[in-house]
Length: 442
Image (cartoon, rainbow, N blue to C red; front, side, top):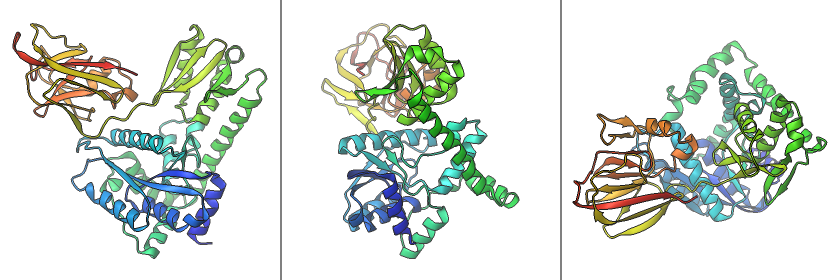
């Protein structure tokens, strides 16, 4: 059976229904093949693909893949959307991934697309399972990536890298080789290029064993999902799209069992389900009153709601790409869940280092997102400090840092609102200044 026929079979198993589907295409061989397969089989499935590309702005030539994907989508008659994030060369893989996912999810919501399709394949899955095993993941993590998750589907997960590459070559496809994929400084790249080839020489059945491990863990995950629905008195259900459990029943169970059943609920919705985090959340809610919440990360939280334990999610707005100027005239803007207001004023004698209001020497100011490697010179201090250290000292959760507004001027980071005012662009007392107020509105 050829690759398009196998692909159609896989789409049938996924039962994705019909309507728009956002397709993440980086320009690499895997995602370019996914694009081709969706186009080649378009008369035999009911999806309406919209091709999406994210230019992270990390490498000087990052515009090349964007142009390649745009040309191919146009040639195939498929709609194309893209963004340029301008993260800069210092951005980490983690920062790039979070920014990419935030934009893709926002675009998915804007299109009303039920599914985001990615080009993860069988070799990606094996790398994921091994990487999670090395990091001490439990059964939920060792199950790897699901073929169909919460609003995301991976139709190539049953295909090997070798078969995808062979198909691309047979078609004469053009794709972009990202040098970072072979850079051993990145853990996944090191696993792919160094560790796994050596292990396969010593253990010829390694791929089969990794697949088996993922299969066993996935079976255990399905079993907990079944227990979640059948446990007497647990009353697993959903109201207004938010799943919940009967809290008194859950609390009467042994702690390890309560954690496992809660994990099962989180995994079904794609929420962070690490055992340590779930254990902490349940412990904090044990003595809490109705209405109190425990943060799970990535916008997810558990809450006591009378006799129910409810899971909810707040979608974090994606920060605009690059920077947004504060114009000379007074104004206001909404920025990734924050309200930013600015006006002309007279500078005070004292500015608070951790205030929500700051005054600056008149000039061009801009709002932007945090970038890895950012440094700030604290007001009244000496030297510069990594912005990430400031976030850590202020106990800002990791998931909130990507959408925290930073104010800069003349290429200098001048203010992390509520956390650290810099000595840069500091007006003298009584002098004309731009007053900026930042308030969280979500």
